[in-house]
Length: 121
Image (cartoon, rainbow, N blue to C red):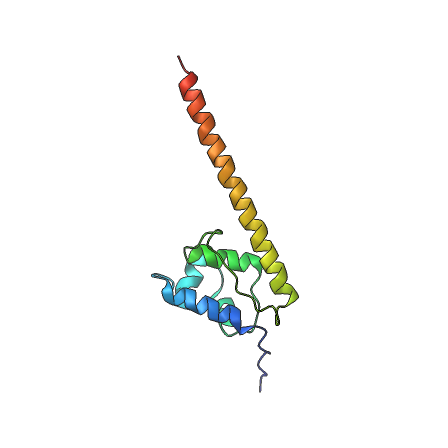
């Protein structure tokens, strides 16, 4: 008989299940897999708490569920926080900072385009 893996952190699975339930078009593992590019079996393992998702996986899932980096939030229990979770939170914070820089660059690009348009004779 095959042994089940130890549950690492069911909080990730519960959070993903809540997001899937509130999604219009990603309420099943198969639908989320198609839209995110993450395998259905990987999504199932996350939902069952058998694996902690990587930052890359979380990003693909968040985008598929219609979230932006600005709205992605990770709930972490400080008492049970694993190294992977801490690194994931730090990576998401870095991505959010990068998202802010991209917004500033886009604003600067629009401003430059307006200046060029106004400078034309």
